[in-house]
Length: 399
Image (cartoon, rainbow, N blue to C red; front, side, top):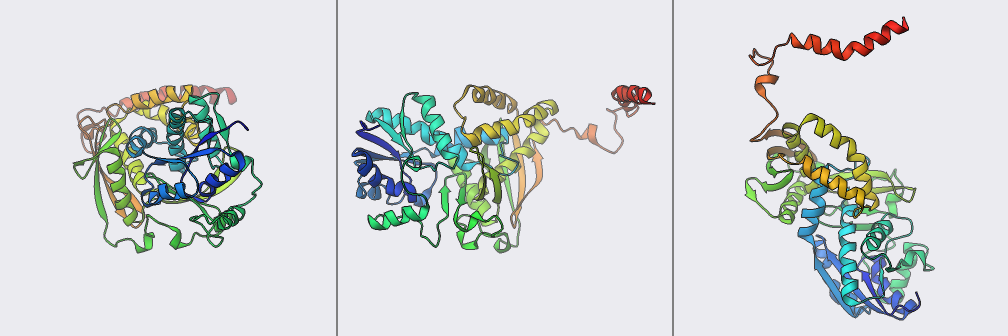
């Protein structure tokens, strides 16, 4: 590793990566190229180029990946109904493989000797980044400072930043870590490390509290085509634009706050607080769309795979053979998931109030409790007896 002359650093402008430019130059005496992926951080990217150059970066890439993130990553997770441990929609998990893929492409273009990330040695992101690095460049050299340097806490990093006059977005009074993208904002650390502590209201950036949300419900219609959301209230939009709009609508109505203690891949439990307004709406609407357009056995088969798909996404096994197989299954399962869902947003709740589809499996003439001419209720007796046959045999044996 001592022959490294040029490094491409994944740069967010957060606490860790803010000091990393300086640290890399001191530790490796190398050129540092900063790379920031725009996956929807919005104002967090303001001044990022100037800040990286000021701290010693020779060059800065700021790559607009928002549409690709929404189209190929968020929407794939949406089609799979992927939720880790039944609660977490995985905004950070899903963004990392995309960021890492472009990281390797830039390293190739720059003929860099190594890549570097600021993920800690306790977390999941180190795995997500590095699995993708190796999937695209099997012999890549990786610098993971949290596994090398002598700093042992975020307070140490803040002290280093103060010593070297580096602006950082956290203080010792507010030391929690934040990650923002189009899909969500995550908060960890600081007062949140005690799972009994309720988050401070001033921490939240994209959602109002349900108590302060409007007293009048808001109705929203979302159109899907083969499992992909394409319109909001009849207006067709690009993937990024659609999610961004629903973030604003959902956030204004207190939708999408989640407080979780989750199981990290490395083995420990971690407490995270998330804001995921737009994708919470999309998840609820998508399941409603599937309810009238998806075959029962296909749905149950796919639902049985949700824990595995979610686990692979959470752990970072995005570019793997098993994920390729599951992606094909997901895409096939979504053919015909086409129609419109109407939801009501009210004080943190997203409630399905209507769904319709041109090719709906729901048949009122079969399901009605009124008189019908298509279903003979006498047939149910034989159906039940056949399904009970093994139970009757077992009962006779046990007598």
